[in-house]
Length: 222
Length: 260
Image (cartoon, rainbow over all chains, first blue to last red):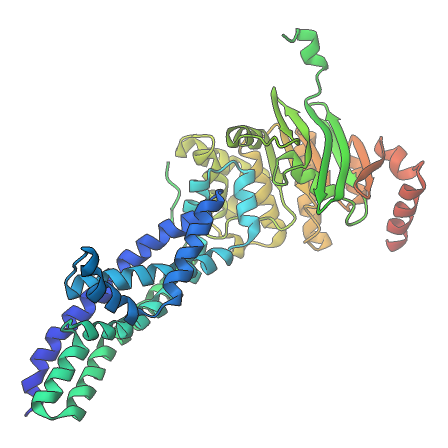
């Protein structure tokens, strides 16, 4: 079975694809919290910077970013290996998209919730922490999962700067073995093996988010 | 320095010359309101008369273009580029509670948790203290057995009663009601009005924007009729509602009575 010859190599690539996607998504989600706070600031400067960030990093495709950071940044003294470049670029881009996801999640929460919180003298932090975010999360979560699945696939672009991810290894293996059909179908299957479980996991958490509401958790503690 | 006598003569709540402009047009055009402790004021008037906007200024959900609010030794001043600090706003909102037309309960929290949250977070009561208070308030509004229900599992009338309990839990000096029964059918509205009557009878200072004429007449100590951002007429409920002196009030009340 020739298929067995290149599968170990492809599976090596799965780890890098997973590493780059998961780290970028995690860091991007955290960075997006700060950008969201900036965008909701009282100060125009912060709001402007937050919005500018989103527009800039959403408006330029990942590939030029990867090339810019990997090939051009060394000229200004910033040298990153291929994998860190991939993580950095996709973190920065994810943050822009996830900020937009947070925005629509927060917008889905009724204005009356903010007003009620204000009328009860809740601080801004308490308002978001206890009232707004628990409601927004129900909108945010499914969109974030959809974005994550997209990111798994977009991460194939890192093969262009030489990261040995699934796509990169598939290209190499197809050249050496001459079995392009089987190699690339295998690579496609591996991507699905990553994204389908994410989708299933996403739906099950989504269900729990809704039913957790029904069960009424003890979330208020002194 | 205020003398004791001066303190007793100072109104409990003193709202002065509130103006709210939207795009250069005045929605509220210089309204003042002075209330004694325990007084119940009903504000009636046609839609768009600025009554809700005025009410929302009293806890600064709506920032007035200009005007001042004094309550319990705290003065909040707006206008001429001045805006209250967030510390003063927090202090104002500890003194003024609000009940909304659309209830605005927190859907992610149970009835009990809705009442506990701000007690713990705003007033720093202990969880135990806050829960005891919540339980007794839920009992007071007739919903003791619904403590662990989520808002979506309650009827509109029940939700509004929880919302009243939530506001009462912070022991506000003044409780504002913004058309509390307008989103309810008459039967559910009656439940809410019954609770409001009880709260009024217990001596809470209340300002109620309402279309419930019988509530205004029976419960309020004073009725204010507003139109076009101004107070047209105010006085004892019987006098304003039975023998209104201003043609605008007469026209409004006639329309209301004919609808019945």
